Length: 466
Image (cartoon, rainbow, N blue to C red; front, side, top):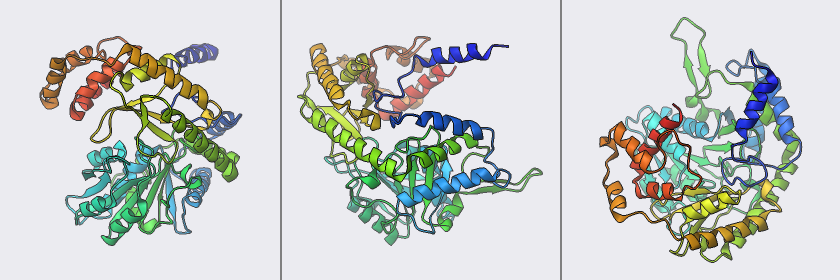
């Protein structure tokens, strides 16, 4: 038997190789309130309820109380009424999955259901379409603002449409879709309208943006993550429905077997009470005034960073981000953004590369949190230095014949052995860890079609988890 201290020491050593989760230097994946003591409170609340099972709220009524409290807090923030109901889920993807599932199950008369979404909608909706057999109708967005086009969205709605999706804001560019006209168009056709506010739902109510929540007629559901700008530990999101009738198709029940009747509000059956208890504790501790202050400080920080980026020769912010997400692209051809990402990593920052997609060029994604307040000048200075270093190095060059060969590949016809060769060529195969610099890898992946890139990364994931 291994001693507890030795186990924890080993875990700490493993964690030392991760990106930092606090301090504002990892500009994706993590959210840091910078509030002292908040992590300890969440950890203690998590420990108190981690062994409790959310499968049966009649057996563990404490979780029922916690969930109702959390849902009520989210509903109050997002324009809910006394009829608004909700469910705590494991994350934004599950919330989006359940919104699609509820919409599909509510229309059993439609044999080939579809959902209309802007091409900037989160990939979670494509995952839901894949899982639940719903056809995606992806509508082009404005090529300059990257916002959904209300007229094009309305025109895409047909008799087979079960759901219309809008983003508040979109992850890739941080812009808020025009919810009012799109929700009205959906309502006029008798179709549900879901607002994906997973990343913005705890920020936008404190920002100067057009209405996007349940105050907008036609909005039937909203997803909002607590482990983003509510600064709760990972594993908590809320899916809100305007009323219980809209939520009911999301539930699953099965009594046709000799065991207990299975009854699930989410995709999970057993659910640890730990994440829910931690979220409840954090929401109670920070409170409405605390979140308002955090939001205002973070929005101000994002504006400072945007203004600083605008002054850097060679960079441009895409669209007009209204929240705390920023997408930055290159305006010169003597460097590429993938090399800038490597240079930022060398300076102890992580910015997230995003590949070109239709009107959106290759860019770097920055998620600004409260932990970035006060550090804006350092971030902008290092970004300016990274651009200079990238320009000195020059853009990554891949031989034209290699680009042509990659472009001609058909992912469905490649064998596992051929995929292994492609992964090795991209620096992703074998037993080696990821290279310190990813610009060449990202350039090769950028040359691949989305379908080929998906297959390559699926194969890479299989290599990692082997």
